[in-house]
Length: 160
Length: 338
Image 1 (cartoon, each protein chain N blue to C red):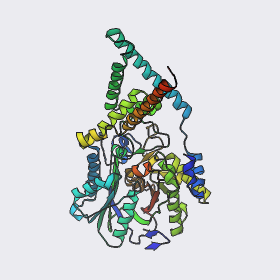
Image 2 (tube, each protein chain N blue to C red):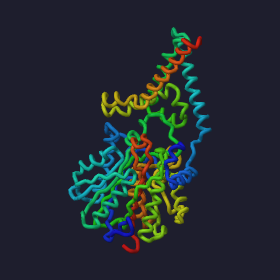
Image 3 (cartoon, rainbow over the protein chains, first blue to last red):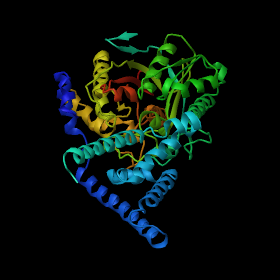
Image 4 (cartoon, chains in turn yellow, orange):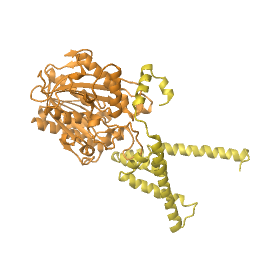
């Protein structure tokens, strides 16, 4: 909990906070990191294998193989989400399955499945990007800022 | 009769003439599967949405309770029920099916005892002959509303709890045989400033302690008066915190006398983290397992303290703290004074 929030609490509440914290089961940080590393790594290894598959059997180069690889990984993620396995992997893996593109796929697809009962327009359409929407918005914005900085540096800073 | 600051003592001791509990697949694998009247192996219950399945849980429990008591639905004078879904629609829709006069109540996971206390009050003072009361929750419907989509892969911390899929209903009457409701203590809203919605037990513990202490003080009794003081859904963390909190306040309850419904319902090894929760948690455990134990004579007096966290996803996102409440109801069966 942020210290800023704690400042607004009364002394009794602050005392209880400490009292409660002592008895709270902590997140097993080290274990979570190891699991995230292993599962996240495994997903990347699979991704790499998919890349090689496309380069070996189809007409893709190292530069162009990204798109079909991502599409395949998201497709696998979709299947796993649909049959209700992805959330179980995630409970074990944590960030390991959330950070790769498969986690992004899961965020979109799980929301789409969830809101199917409210119809296609107000349900699926309106809620599909409920979780992923902020990733898209701030991801695009961050890319814009980085591009702007790069442009300024090239124009006036003599970079590149 | 009002006793102390916020307790009622029911001289006429309304009788719980019948109860009914309905559960889902996860509960069927749990420790108390035998105490459910009806268990479903599919979360959808054959419906096309989780919310409809939630309503069906309630309807089945209502009908089962009436069937067990051998009364027609026309004899039910009031329904007092609630759940966790927006505008408590599953309760209202189930009440529409029964057709009896209906009062919808919301006390989050404390709804079961809020309903029982109010029903007992009505029956005690001759307000009705038969009152149906109950609470229900549906794991995925509640997850959808309060957290992320059910299939979303977000890792839950060890403090999180698992929402029970189940409905527990009791039929109260002024006559008949069965466990009797003898007293109730209404809770205050207690907010200790916790904000983590994945740690409800820790947030609700002070509310449970507040109500238990008020109950014992109002009725001037010792914790040993009850064979069991059982909280609704504090889970591992909430139970430990509340036990230590009472110790700190100079109230000692033996470890085994102080139980939690959220810890009773599931088996060791089921992935429920800190324990079960939800409005259906205390309702199914009390109206199923605990009353069965009372009827077998294993327990004579119990105090049920159902705890609820009165937050919404909106208040959490707006950085509000989590206000909590607990309502206590005393149930006795085969005791000396009946």
